[in-house]
Image 1 (cartoon, rainbow, N blue to C red):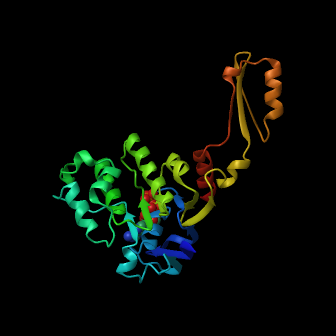
Image 2: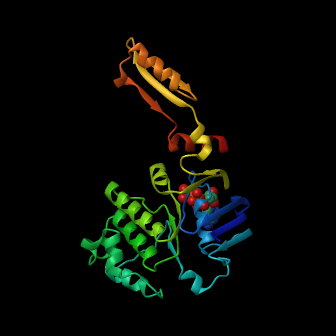
Image 3: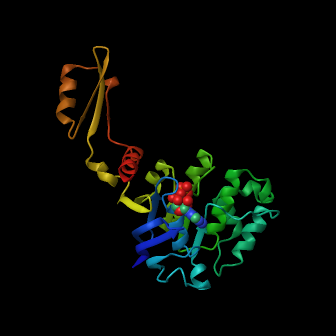
Length: 278
Ligand SMILES: Nc1ncnc2c1ncn2[C@@H]1O[C@H](COP(=O)(O)OP(=O)(O)OP(=O)(O)O)[C@@H](O)[C@H]1O
């Protein structure tokens, strides 16, 4: 059974469609990424699926229940890291994590969670004294402390330094490996590529493409771009199968240190899709 199922999900704000009829299916243990430009409808979608916002129409099942009417027992099974996380004022990291752990029937140990997000050295610091990236790590800690079956992450790594981001990726992979289902939004294409089993690109409230990072938008079948230096000039050719050209270049004795063969990056593909979606 799918952990998240949505059919023809719609939400309008003052006559403007923020989500204009999307279908989603996410299986248990899957990491699913929602990509899309600012205002595409990602947060609205996540908030509806997490039971934080009412939809106008569409069929939605999340962990077997309708998020619009599901109760406390259902809420205890999900974890949420939203964009505008709560302001924790005067509590320390450890106090806050312990406090939130108290809402769940089977929480992780607060010390373990603080360690997982790399905040052990800051456990007794007041949250308001932390840097932006450190506060975001507290948000992630609060999202996972309840040992959720399903975790919603809305731009979770904004403000993370590169090391914290890699550490977060490892954490997400470990959680998914243990069977946690994860729906995340991100503007970092490398993050989507590193983490997502599948992803969907939203533009203007609609899904314009869906697939794996390797196949999205026909990426796997895209032409290769071959570039090399010859007679002091850079030459470039784009072609489906570069085999013959490469053999010829080798036979011609070109300087192989100048040779590159590339396919469109996920970012190239994404930008193409967004352009096409407008
Ligand atoms: N509470 C609200 N009232 C009115 N309009 C809203 C509200 N929340 C979102 N919108 C509008 O709905 C559209 C989708 O917003 P949403 O926040 O879902 O986009 P997003 O893809 O998450 O963007 P971002 O990448 O900037 O976070 C936008 O045009 C936004 O202005």
